[in-house]
Length: 69
Image (cartoon, rainbow, N blue to C red; front, side, top):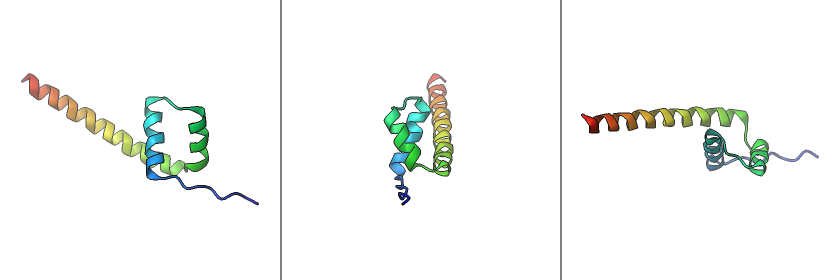
């Protein structure tokens, strides 16, 4: 009988995307994520994570430039 797929929580999805952005993954975590995470979840979380990264960099640059002027 087929085993029901375990649903991943938002924290698990965010953690997987964060560590993937850094390029650091343990094999056991990767294998667990590949079973629990759906591709759609990873894509959406990746886009949101990329948006936060870009906005954070923009804010950091604006802060540094405002301190110099």
